Image (cartoon, rainbow, N blue to C red; front, top):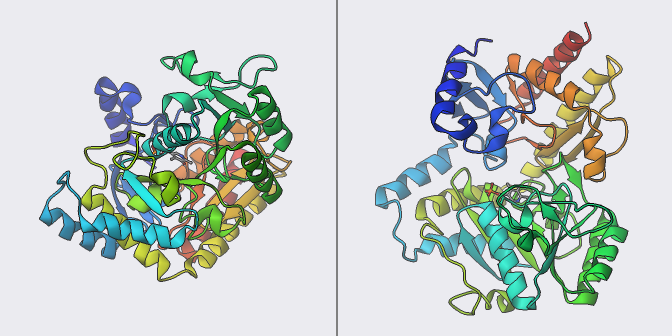
Length: 430
Ligand SMILES: *Cc1c(COP(=O)(O)O)cnc(C)c1O
């Protein structure tokens, strides 16, 4: 494939945009080549400015569960656009979208809309701190919750479980309140509770982690978190910005019995427009301004065009719940195919599927946490990614990301991707 125009576009972008991109993962730093610049999408396909066509398994990193340019979503958005882009005043479409979400999520009575997943999580944590009147929060290594200050942490040195900043510009005064535990390891969480003498406002977790590859939490682990939270007056926040409407219609909460106190949503609820949301019981949400004292606001929050895209998308999803069975069948067929293609040249691979989400690691042992995920052969992934891209298969450009199936992903597309995987593995080992 020729990438000449994309290479030139990347150089030009580099002059005026840091790294040439507006979100770091897009820069292809972890893989070979330069990122294709996208001209347009069409159903399950992406087209770049060189005219190359790709089967899209990234789907804007999750939001596009109906693929590109879905007719219903497009038409509803065009109608909304014609009425005006933003008012900064209440509209009925916000209530309608809130009602859809409240209907689906048992743990949500009320929901507040924001403009990104980052904002949703940041606001939910402020609310949890405001309600509990505690500063400490607990997160898990390998889980991503957006780029707000207190969540950009890495493990501290030595035995300390309190985090240190993972980015310059984040004050240690903030991250010292963020405790870091190991995913799927309840003992590490218990140790944090001991260190912090129980003074933890909330645990935030991706109940189905999608930002260290796809790594679901064990049910017993989630139950253990629930018990610990109840015992210590700590709130449990499920960050379902990715898994919401992706793993199942109700995200992880459609799969697990464990109910969180708060939920954060994003990605699919905006169908490609910038939207985030956080919700909880009416009692907890009453602490939020203007009902309560915890401040939170946004000029473009609940934007009518974005709300309309989300509402159309959610209505389509709820009217066809069998979609998730089809998604999972296709995703399973895809990763099974990848695994066999790798096995054909004696390369080990472990795979995971949850609804429309899929993940694969070049590893020979199960991946339960971030340390396991880091054992993945990233060099092999980089070669695999490049080979697939050259064959028109657009996969996430990092081995720590999740892949997605959408309603426009056909069986023929899956077959084509598997064929490309065999060719790629054979090429790497020729
Ligand atoms: C994508 C993501 C976020 C951040 O959402 P943005 O819209 O990128 O700010 C937060 N949490 C999880 C689990 C995510 O996958």
